Image 1 (spheres, one colour):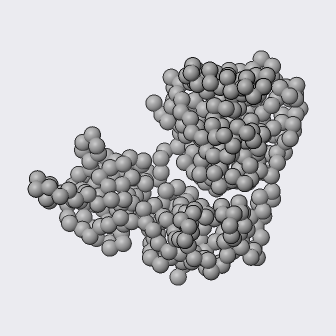
Image 2 (spheres, rainbow, N blue to C red):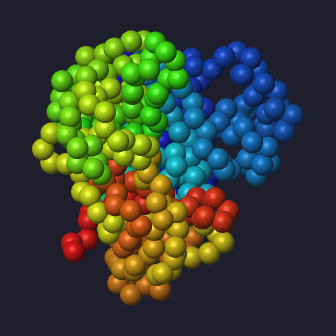
Image 3 (cartoon, rainbow, N blue to C red):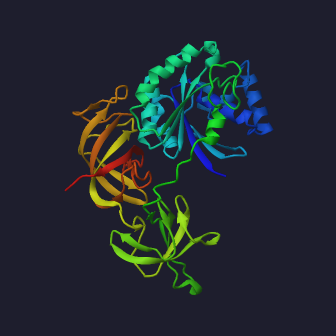
Length: 419
């Protein structure tokens, strides 16, 4: 069966965790002992109903405050498709956690409280979902039961949000009116909203097109580990292990090793279960080459025309995630790109994005917590990268504080800076 990865995003108290709980409960994906524990916890807290948000909000701080803090992953399946859900936090303080959960998603499910309408965090999460290359967006206008299932209230939210979403790079945007608490239009169509003629949420999730993993036309293989068994019967064995980041590799393919530019061909592709005739993203494999080549962790094996950009100067969108400081011109950081670790310096901060209007401030003095901007970098060693829109793996990176090892920022590469 196909696998669909999706994330829930949106502002605080819009009902993300409750929706996931309802989706799992109504699709019979919750074990009895888990349900019994949630019932007991809800009763002990004096709640009038079973709190479905407790299915994903497992941290003590989350249950005390009634908010999601960390990303919670849940898995379920229907006869038509398998799903991995990332329930991400809505509070602006935890935007960095939302970016983490959404970075691998094929679809973003953004919730909007019909009573509150579209707020700044709704726009921020929608823009981040677009920036992260998520092709499909589902806008769930939630808590329709508290608005009397009024069509006018739903249409007002849609009319407010749609012009903003049309400026973003989504392949498909779908609006669905729901009540996560009551289950309306979550798994089954609701009888309380006869004016809505679209699918229920689960039906849409089962039918939406799953995008292919990575760029199938541009084979990329960042080397993670060199395998050299110290045994007599394997004294000639040399394999390069890693995860395919794009394209398809076959035994016999002519490949180029970066940064040396050495050309050779693939002798075999192996997995834990034995040799395979092809490897594509996101398979973890070991590639054996016909020639002994000087290859180490951080190098990249590529194939075919249209190779990655090679250089140490590039421009990227950056989401700053640190509370302890700001991203400033001249800042020096460790940069991790695929399996390659280098040092980088910020050459300039060219623009800072205004979330509500998508306008760019072209004279920023830096980036603060949760701000997004266009930044130019120079690295100590060349990187082998693609634009993020072409390949989400080879087009992304993180910035790390060398002193504390804290992750400071996530970046999406726009392209190389011409010499």
